[in-house]
Length: 182
Image 1 (cartoon, rainbow, N blue to C red):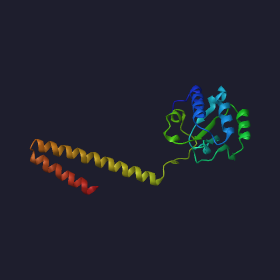
Image 2 (image 1 turned 120 degrees about the vertical axis):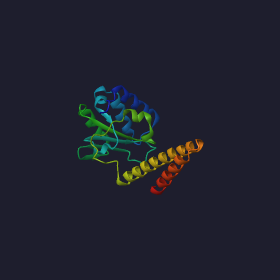
Image 3 (image 1 turned 90 degrees about the horizontal axis):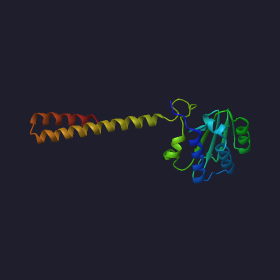
Image 4 (image 1 turned 30 degrees about the vertical axis):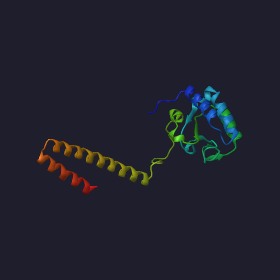
C-alpha cells in the first residue's frame, strides 16, 4: 500500500510545476492554481498516469509535450472545455480528482514521482505488453548468463593461480556448456 501524499507536498509540487513549465491551455494554469489554494481540493487530488481511466480525471500538457493540451474525464464523458471542468471542480470538491501532467521527461522527474500514486483504475496488465514481457525475459536470461559466466571465469583464474588442474578442467567444461546453452 502506498503512503498518501500530503496536501502540502501536492501544493508545493503544483507551484514548482507552474514555475517551470508553460501549459498549452491557460485555463489549465487557472485550474492548478485554484486547486493549490484550496485545502479541501488538495486532500482529494491524486497525481496519476493514465487519468483517462479514472472516474474523474484531468490530463494537462505543457508546450514541451506532444500530448493533447487538455482533457477532462467524468465517468464516460470527455470534454476539452476547461470552464465546464472548472465548474465541476468547484461543485464537487469532496470527490477524488485524478490529474495527469504531460511534460518533457515526466517519467524521469523526481518531483513528479514524489507526488505520483498508483492509478487504481488501470485495467490489469495495461502497461505490460507481450513484447515487453519477452524483452524482460531475454534481459533476465542475459543477466543471469553474464553473472554465471563471470563467476566461472573468476573461478578458472583462481584455479590457474592455485595450479589446480582438476578444478580448472571442470570449470572449463561448465563454461563451454553454459556458452552452448546461451
